View 1 (cartoon, helix red, strand yellow):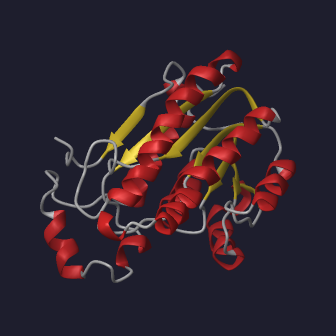
View 2: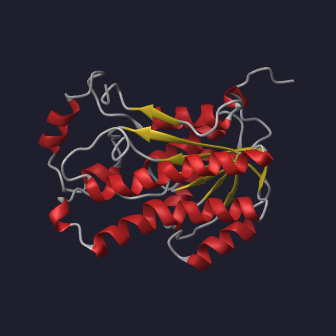
View 3: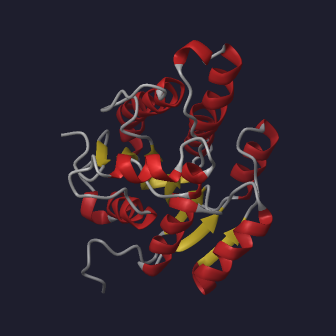
Length: 248
């Protein structure tokens, strides 16, 4: 008998966006805690790297583009009964609102809002999420706790996701399915090294965090493990801020 409430042994967990960054770190952390992990992402080549990291704890690898309706439906059909899901797939941008056209908002909301919400909706409707399952949405302090210039398009999509999390937590509680979110501060993933912001600017910005650095993917992954585990069995509708003290 396992008396560790943080253990994920005997749990089957889906992780989206598992090909890199927070998603890959989360899949790895879940496997380390004993979960059978199902990984999905758009790039089969990069998913293979994650699969190799997980070894025998990888139950299945299902490439899918969650912005495509058919891919989402096929993914849901392929899933076994789940004890948990961490919906990490997303994108970011730095864009002043004066350049935030409808096209830019639509693009960001398709990836950051509509894709995870539709997947969560179908998993619940089709009863893929077992009684007692836990869903973790990766939101952001952007749009929820922090409102920095140039972050409006991205922040709006994450704020909408965080709001739906709370509604889902209320509605899904009838089946004892918990829904929470994690709101990270800036996390050092490939997304922030795309040239939109210089490395010098990133280094200077990191100094504004009370703990003196940006987050690491593992910091967020450890929070997800907690929300998936029985240690958080009386927690739902909560947005867990993990931001190195930035929001204070």
